[in-house]
View 1 (cartoon, rainbow over the protein chains, first blue to last red):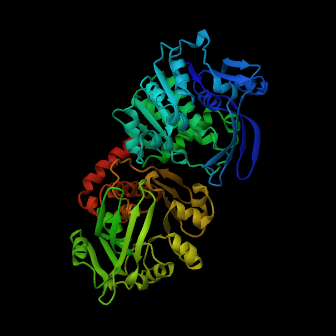
View 2 (cartoon, rainbow over the protein chains, first blue to last red; view 1 turned 135 degrees about the horizontal axis):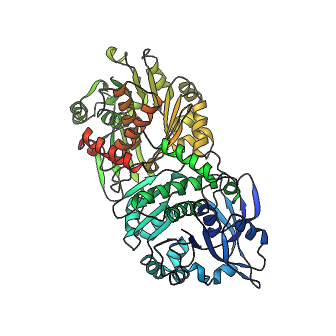
View 3 (cartoon, rainbow over the protein chains, first blue to last red; view 1 turned 60 degrees about the vertical axis):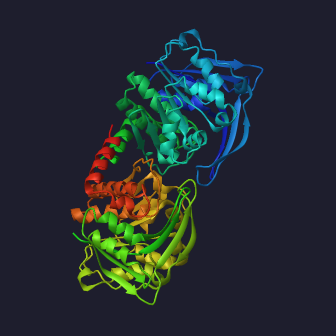
Length: 300
Length: 300
């Protein structure tokens, strides 16, 4: 089943304690799409400026991603982000961020995209995310991401958006911010009561937690010693998870758990190199091999 | 198979954001013993002062713990600790600590304890821990805990102690401090190269990681929303793990993994109330029931 993602594509400059890389293809929708593409066809909707490197679009096309929903605003500038990671590779500082065309993004879906049944709303203003929902009346599973900015500045919009989606994916600090609870288990349940049928809290190197009506569980991250660049790991996680659900065309509790595991594994590959390089270097077989290791790791 | 533990017993005063409790039975060996006792007979060696409440000794006796190795120094004072937890219930501040008799502790094992085959060296000066090892020539499995204080002040002793034990249990910040690595996977392998055949890194609410010669794995904590008092959770973890190994009289890789899971589950109960209250309220059946849930949670 094809999967629709609406979110940012960006140009990233990334500095880690040992290296720096400039002009990488980044953005939530890029990472999400490439991760999901291991499992299912992906349709991407986003916006870039006249400065957008054609090679980035070619990269996505070559991965088999349908970029016919990628708007180009020739007079505008693409979303750029420059960040530096602390030695712990977890905390990071945003050195520069220019939203530009993405800041004024009006998502307009190509006609053929409007029949989407599996939809991921990448991190964007809740009002923008709801404009996407308006255009996909046949949607069976809508999952969204969010961030601290929207929790703090557009709280009412966010609550309205939460009442319209099936699932929310957010990270641990965002869940604490949204609920005021320092206990993640309580926070997860509290977020679910705001509307979504299920909530996934991403904990970075510590894995992810799932909160459904009848299930609460946590799966650990796959332990990798090769942590090069965590940028986009959360989007890769969401891409792997949603990609598997769309592939199975099913989101019963058992499938959701397996999907979360796939998300964790795709994310574990994504941090092993800069930008999308590690994702480009692997195949579905590599993911399946790691899945066998992961399942062995969790059985006793 | 009986299990020997040498470590502190203490009087704890604990303050959380919502409550305060004084004069609780605490100390690494107390928490360890009570956790291990679900699985196997436990022999405890420690020291207290003339001010030690007899009721605490009775509590341990009533749990079936052999306290014939508990030295009493009538002229001395017992180890006391007062701590306050931050709202996140993870960070804590030590408000007062008086080592007293435990600071001068000379572990002398009763004759009948010297045949011990399973030994846990609770957090103490490495030189004290090694004095225990000298007294258990037939030991098959010696596992130790340590802390930042010994890493910083008695580094050479610590390295010598590490070369003499089979396993080391330490928490994430200690592993980073000992190795200088911010990556826990790398840190775990580095600690193992210092001597122990296996290393367990405790990550609190995020579970625990295992590093053996051929195995690296991580198991998540059991998600509990009832976090009342985390004091002693790490010792309860070690007690559950070592208790199961001694019960099985086996420490092959498969048994070690199951043991780590039991440690995680006993620890998950231990945080659900103050001090040793939650441990007192449960039976082995409760642990087995949670084990079934845990295994179900980790399978997909």
